[in-house]
Length: 225
Image (tube, rainbow, N blue to C red):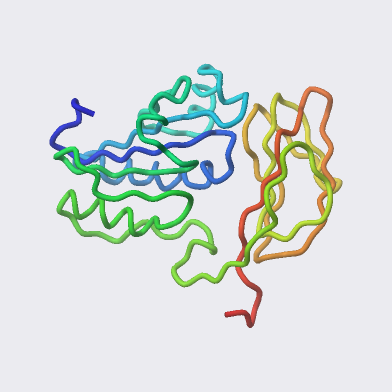
């Protein structure tokens, strides 16, 4: 951080095995593309939350697979995590050019607020990145989703989307449809236009194991406010 003095720095803690981290990455990449030439430095801090994410080579491969072009630090043994007393994934910390914390946010969301804070530090004004998903639009009404499940899971759920966290590579069969899993990480398996009650049937080929099944929130159905 001492080498970044004089410009704003956005630090993002993430894990390629966590769906909420994956869902946040496109905003980080967009801000990097929009504001790096104006002085913003975006730095990803990859702190593992699942065993496959502890391998630095797997992190490098995930960074390439996910198309991340800003610098990523591999946080071995969660040293940086402990320095920040960070509470979870994803988490972002925006520092001003004087090295002082200007804004922070834990979890998904508040993308427009973070971008406006970046603009304030840079002294620019422009339209913020448009919401990438309907549930991220201003005023969107969301319904709480089913809680995440550790390990393989098949059964009922209520959510806007279903994700699997996998170790290895192979094919997952999701409600009868085949989904290729090229490498360890988090992959979206089912996406609904709004909060939906459904049932999941998930099996995998032998070389692929399910570390967790995660659920993301969905928009409330018509007539719900």
